Amino acid sequence: MPSHRRTVGGRVLAIVAAILVVKVVASIVSRYPGYFPPDFTTDFLFGREAHFRGGYRWAFYTHILSGPVALMLGLFLVAEWPRRQFPAWHRWIGRLEVACVLGLVAPSGLWMARNAAAGPVAGLGLAALAVATAICAAMGWIDAVRWRYSSHRRWMWRCFLLLASAVVLRMIGGLATVTGWTADWLDPLATWACWVVPLFAFEVRERIS
Image (cartoon, rainbow, N blue to C red; front, side):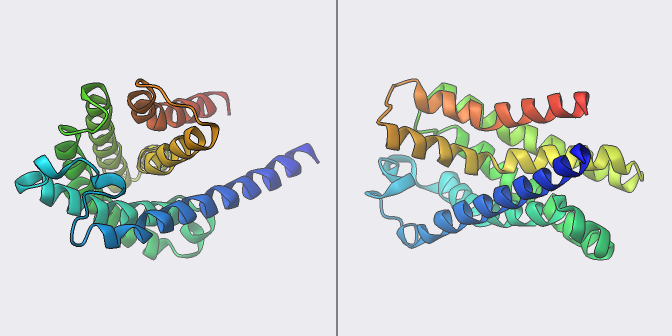
């Protein structure tokens, strides 16, 4: 019975997490009208007019268009039921996911990190996030083609958690807004915590399970 309860609890938690991811992605996408054309008085673009040109402009649009796609694809790929019922779909979507992360999400995120609004510490955190995401996607792909499926699943779970850092970052920001918690170090800390903490929790879980 305890084992059954843990299984049901895990499924419920997974469903809640999936709903949260979808909700946050929908919220992010709903703000896109302010980016086409860019409105520098709203949301993410506030105060970025000085460097919103050339490579940064292209990286920004690449990132905001490819990021939600990669996150939603990742949500499908880490789900157990679709993987078991539709293995062919899983393989093709997995290829698309890796191509999206390595070709679009990670490079654009790395480029944008140089101009992080919260300063160089935040920029370093975002750059590390982009590199880590690319490494996880690449390692997951290598393990898949070598039929090392257990290792493949672990790497792709890491990749998904790193992609979901956008969700965690907005949760931290929302919590700070609700509580009225403001500090100069909060944003730089959040850019690290949004991916380091989930990744650390995953590694701990993998070692004790």
